[in-house]
Structure formats: structure tokens, C-alpha cells
Image (tube, rainbow, N blue to C red; front, side):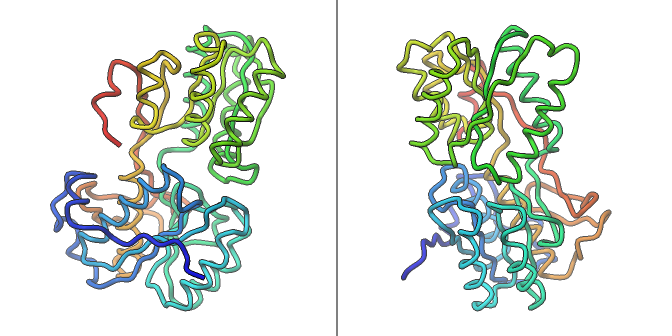
Length: 335
């Protein structure tokens, strides 16, 4: 059975996605490296942008890149792909994990055979990889979500979280920090009534939004820290009587959310550039596979147009802080 696969595109992708010339920052990287990206879901719009960014980076340093992955976000759905990539003797696997633990034994097997493993966007347990490329500091993302929704709600009322899957590492980490932020006195009038799960599926997220509005008639906001969830929630509310009454915010791409900002359904939301996240992960994997870094804290490497990056504690590399998008700036972004 053929697996879903996307290969590195033309050089034009480099320029279109990141405005890159295809040479900088690749001097220390071996040519011809085979690097495979394994997203949570092959058809997730956010993941597609991130993976395309990775392919653009691989194109720059003359690597051989491809994207393979499942069509669902189940905890063990990535295992068969890891096994295949081991058989193919890839130089590196870059994975956004659907589960922190389910894939670890298989990634450890990959590393034992000399394949470098980099997680990005959604981490595994530390023993399952050598580096983790994080979009932003997890604590700042979580706390920032509460700060933003509090502002949108006027500092009081009921709100719900519409997450991805119950076992999504990144979602759960952000939610943990959201709950911690809620303990501060300034949020004493905010009440988190429910954490719902749309499984990063558009239709399920749409139905979950409907269910939240029915179950909590006094709901003032939905926070969806997932690009699939925020778009589905906004789509439902945009054509319902809740438009203008229930705020929708969270993490989404500007292109995905632009229409909902323009029609007043969404006032503000946040994200980083997922294309740059994938691009940074590609360079991290290439430097690891080339031996210019080993994954130790304090080591640095050149990441093309993103410049010099340094490995932090526990093998973490951070892309940068998220941007808040609203009607005043959303047309300045195209991803």
C-alpha cells in the first residue's frame, strides 16, 4: 500500500515561503543527506506549512527530503512510518509526535542504527530524540493564551478549551501553563468549564464547538490552541447566534483565519510561522547528521536565514515568541 508522501519542491518554494537564497548557512552541512519529516497528520494544514518549510531548508543544503505520515492523529499511527524510515536508512527523522511515549521505542531503535532524531512542534519523552525544536517557550504560549482570552472576555466569565487529542504533548503542556496562569488573582473571575477534544479533525472540532455552546449557555469564549480547532470553532460560530457573543481565539495561521477576522467572528489569535519552524528543524537535523553538533546544551549551529541558533537545556531549540494577529496586522502576513 502506498504511503502518503510529499517531496521537496522546486527552488521557488524557498523564495515563496521564506524569501531565501538557497546557499546561506549550509557550509558545514553534508550534501545529499536523506531527511524525512513525519508530521502528526499528512493533511493537517498547519503541518503542511511546517513540512514545506522543512523541505525548503533541505533544498538549500542540497539534501534529499520527503514527508510521510498518517492521515489520523492516533497515538500509535506514526509507528509504521518510523519502521519504514529505519529500513530506508534515512540520515535523520524529524517528527511532530502524536504521543509523548508511544513512538519512543521505535525512535530509540532508529537512533541505535545511527539515524538522528529531531522532534519539532510536539515533543516526545527526552529519551526518544536528540533535539526538540520548539515553536516558542511553552510556558509563554500557555500563559499568553490566558492573557489574551481574558482581555477578549473583559476579565470575567466562563470559557472552554478546544484542544487536539488528549495525548498531544504540545497541547497538554500549553494547557498545563494555561491552568497555572489561571491561578493568579487577576483571573479570579475567569472560569474554565471544560476541556474538549476535537482530535485535530475538522468535523469533530466543529461538532465539539456546537456541544460546548449547548452545554454552557453562559460561555463567553473558546480557546483552541490548535489550528484545526480554532478554524472549526470560528466556522461554526460565524453562522450562529453566538457570533459577537462568544469570542474565539487560540493558535491558527493568518491565511486560515483571515476571513473570520474580517467578518468579526475572531478579534485576535496567536501563532508563529510554522514554515520557519520546519525550516529550523531541517537545519537542526542536518547539522546533527553532519556531526557539527551532538545535541549538547550550549552548542550552536547556523540555520540558514534564521541565523545562529543555540541548543538550550534538555536539547531544546526555540524558534521565537508568537505573534498576536488582529484586524490591524493580519494582512501583513501570508502563511
